[in-house]
Length: 349
Ligand code: 2P0
Image (cartoon, rainbow, N blue to C red; front, side, top):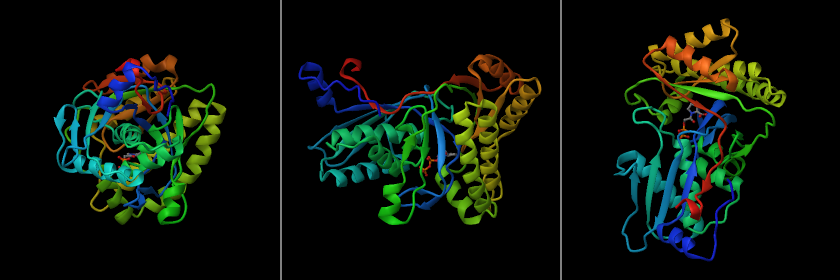
């Protein structure tokens, strides 16, 4: 988390406190994926993961304590949240209150800068921003490791969005409290390596299966899951070495094989979980063609049909062109490495 909040003794501070603290966090894309929990209550992953935080699609969240209210209120992009999204935010607030020894309800207002229907609404940026804003609102003084651990309780991928650039999330060891304390993300400093990620937004309807349900089904029923989890350890070792060398080709190859392996585990689940659509496969063909044309470009996909293509920044325009040629119905956004979660400063109010 950045520490540029201006807690000055003058007017702006009063206004910030009146409204409650506001935090901003960006989504991240895993180059080594998290898929599967070994503890669903504490949200402890089976495997370590490694991601790049983006500089696009931030989430902005304000948490205002409301001692006079009877319950928490949750507003998502200007509309009152209902159902599971609301329940997940309230469960997270309960956890923060328990940690802080506080009881006041809160009003949470969260906004995602994601184009409508893009299918990129991110629980990673969402829970990272909520962790920073809620911890501040309830007076918890947490360092970045503790914030990451807290964000993980909302969504494991959110642990990584506390940090900018590249971040490694530890699956942790042991069970119960030992697992909780040892599962958090930390930054992976990668000097002189700043790739671009061309995001191909594939037009898609709502997700058929939530990632939470899909990963549970995969762990419980896919005969390929344990093999992928074991190979992911080697992928992580290789990835760290490739990042250290600033070797885009190796980083891309490892990320692509890790993602395709994760999707293979889902395809082998019973019943199968398939997030990849015909347009996804068309983009993958476009990426192969780019490589045949001598442009290093590598694909990764998450719990949805969108494709993120890793490349040199100088090739990003050519990659976007290749992607659009292969899948004319999609739109593209080019991202770079982005910042960690932070409180919005008084000057930004
Ligand atoms: C990841 N994904 O590493 C992986 C790759 C999707 C595919 O993290 O259940 O929303 O809240 O911990 O973090 C999406 O799952 O799941 C995800 P929960 P989350 O980015």
